Image 1 (cartoon, rainbow, N blue to C red):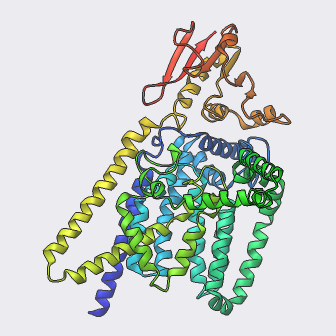
Image 2 (image 1 turned 135 degrees about the vertical axis):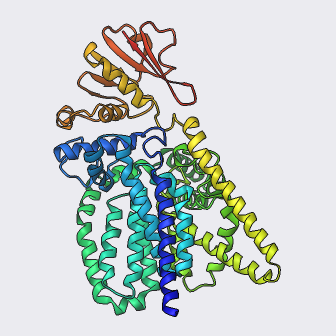
Image 3 (image 1 turned 45 degrees about the horizontal axis):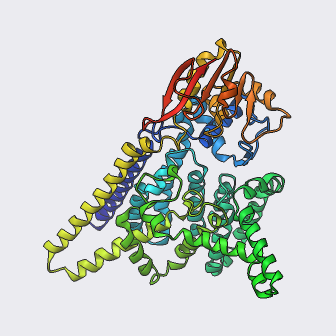
Length: 545
């Protein structure tokens, strides 16, 4: 009888997990190719480079099997691009194929989170955290698009789970380091956050790790070996990305510090000059960037400043989670598992803190699943508390449970309604909606004009032409070989990408012009088509001269 109950419990557990995974997959795959309403320039770049690697074994600039994609001179880590190659080979060069790896890895992250949390706590916590991550606005936002951060999160969560297993059975440390190293080759944030997590966990689990020291040594050796190409690449081109986003490259902040220091010195104020030293200024900027990620407005109400990072009028977490996050944090302090979770949580925003534009939802995605752990613990402990207090008043307890379920349902429904109905319309401009439609239109004119000029106002328009016209990568590599890459001017063949100067460009002949509503007047002679954003405003005007 006892064995039968245990067997039934195991079967039920598997059913629960399968149902949660089905929900996670549905939310990540439903309308994957059409919502968000357009690929953005980063997604298009990843997709075209995957296509280029598939066809030629080289990226768009002719680098053979690189570990970082040059792209917009930001040298994107290449793992996501490589994961996209099979999807492009099977489904073609389209939105679904480019976003497919993100959706798959996002769903797998939900699964691996169950095992991670079960390793740290118990099965009940595992189920609750997994369900919360399955419906998480933060995780859904980035596992439905081709963002490297979501793929990197899968490798980090898997690596951390295997690390925990490795503290008891050292052989798992070997596999753990493989996944953690993969996160380095997938996105930038883990390159700082993962070593910090391992440092703290290494100290905390030092006695267990000492018992598995043979495997620890092997894992460290393997990790260093696997990172050799990364160190070589970081030395060669790594500064390009760092200098483009770090607060320590802010000219305005540095100029202000120098001006104040010079003024203090002119007044004989040595202490003031010391306080305005650029190192102190940078340290304060980093501290502010770190603390920005604990902003309640960012977490529960509005998200960060980028419309592509969240549904409109939504924070990165559900509003209903707020009290349970706080209560869960407090309760976790009383548990033996407190340090690993708290350390991960406190280290998570460290990489984002040294960059501009904080708080930043993408760079801080590595927070997950710590917030879901806090929420789950808060829910479970709250339920236990009220169950103990109201054990004799079952109707009141049932009413409280029903009320919470209604609140959760309303908040989740509101999020889904905003995500699928309103956000695509309100922020289609941010997703570069209209670029596909513009490229489709100009492709039809390709043989009828001598030159095609497309505005650079929405940034990186050439990538949309490469992607949606499936330009032959071998031909394009020859076009850009040895050429200087300029920030706001690109060209290949008869295509030129720059801002439109209507007073000059309207005098051109046998040319197709694609400009914004501000660049080309509505009454322009030769108007071929107007392309609108989903909110009805003008995205492009296309004119034949």
